[in-house]
Length: 126
Image (cartoon, rainbow, N blue to C red; front, side, top):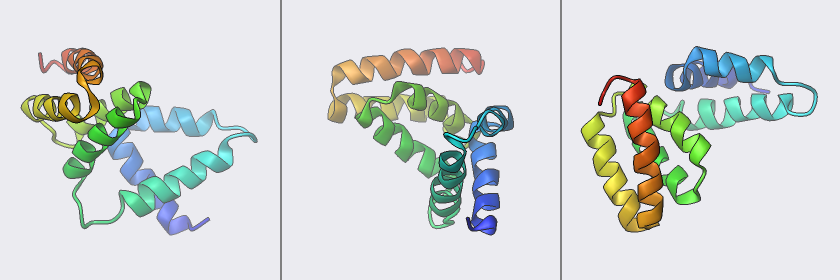
């Protein structure tokens, strides 16, 4: 493991997803999934999110569309919360949802709107 890349990834992961969420995942890791948690933190968050070419807000916006296209709604909800932390506004999320509905299909747009409404309500944005 590249310790420097892991630490950068840990910082990026915590700032986007929240320390509580990240700490819970890392603390509950066991012999079965610990390697995955560490490698994902290093690769996705250190290498991917650690590249300063694209800012966190833009990455969050990209992730919302890609994760919606994959239909991974638990991850989509987590990243919707992270997008708010990274400065994505309610109006920007709404526009992203329009694009998701156009390119991923109306049923996927409906599902994302439902989850986004819940996330935005809990964040006090609606």
